[in-house]
Length: 79
Ligand code: FES
Image (cartoon, rainbow, N blue to C red):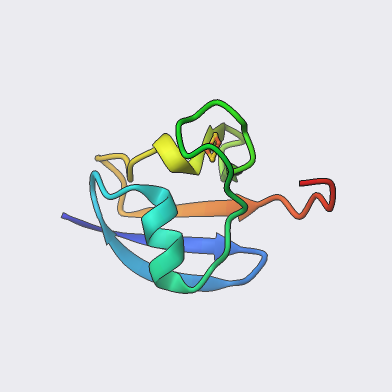
């Protein structure tokens, strides 16, 4: 099943498959999420979902049960 992923603030929309890693989706969309360890421990890749949940893109797959997902990138210059 494919899910529409909407990246903010870049305002980029792309289709992704359930289970696809969000980091890979972002890469495919041309959106750059800062990365570090790629193992879920450094929090460099932290993004925020529309409901306020904060997740790490490198270990987070596209969740099932949604047709659309909005992902907000933090633009914290200290990353
Ligand atoms: S890159 Fe380190 S937590 Fe994702």
